[in-house]
Image (tube, rainbow, N blue to C red; front, side):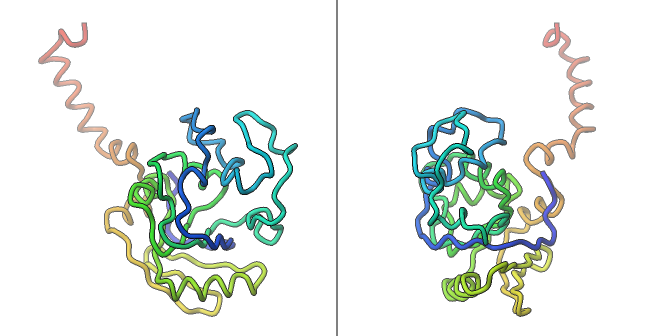
Length: 212
């Protein structure tokens, strides 16, 4: 997992509340567990005019010209600005996989569904909770300013606007440490690789029948 320390990114505004994981990545695309390749189908039912299917050539599909992520001004966005209860619905980890594969590293919302919130941290995405009043101001600035970018400083726990105003956010200490160091669950386990090897070597001697 890539480290997350300080990040500058173009912001895309998705002004909707209660966006569920089936909207983020529809159920028909859940057949793979590779963690990659889901980006082209992120928000599939909103981005395209037809119903997408796995293996379909998205370049041949008609895009919805009114969906925010299809607008040229938000091409390459890496920060998603949205509303309350983002990621509700099913617990599918494919939802953060799709966001990350699309290129999004930060999601800023008023609140998140718990399981989705946890899955974001495990996959290198920083979910940031800000008050509704701050979100309203950000939405207004983004829509009024083409090329609007934010700086996210995880060490200082600040979202910094272009005008220099810093918006503090809370984050669990352990999750913050994992993101700063690029540790997913496997990375955390591998920190103890020497102890694991020692245990396995001892067990092989003491319980050789397990390895026959």
